[in-house]
Length: 139
Image (cartoon, rainbow, N blue to C red):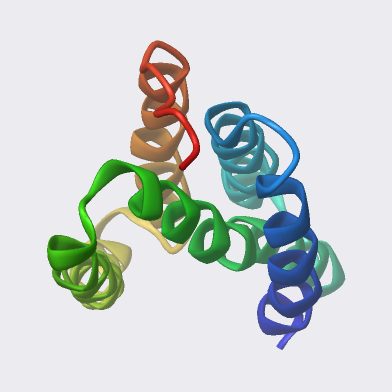
């Protein structure tokens, strides 16, 4: 619930910011802000702590759609843009499906906390990698 509540207003804010600031920097920031709470979810001891951290994770989900759509507008010609956004949306759905499936398999074996670590680490690595990319010229 908190995840979705945070995502909607953040989407509006990130769309506004994407028009004015470096999208590359925004993506890196959003990944860190959203995935550090994911890491901290490993250490929760109460439901309210988990609720707050999951709510903060909604920042990543809400912000990424406007940021990636803005980048797609500058990275791909009009003829390919819709296809690239469809690939992105498909990967978003596939990532959720694969992530939940993996969490369902490993949680009974190593505990319910580990999927948070496993989900956060690749995103934090991605934040570092994105920092080294060139941002396309706005057009």
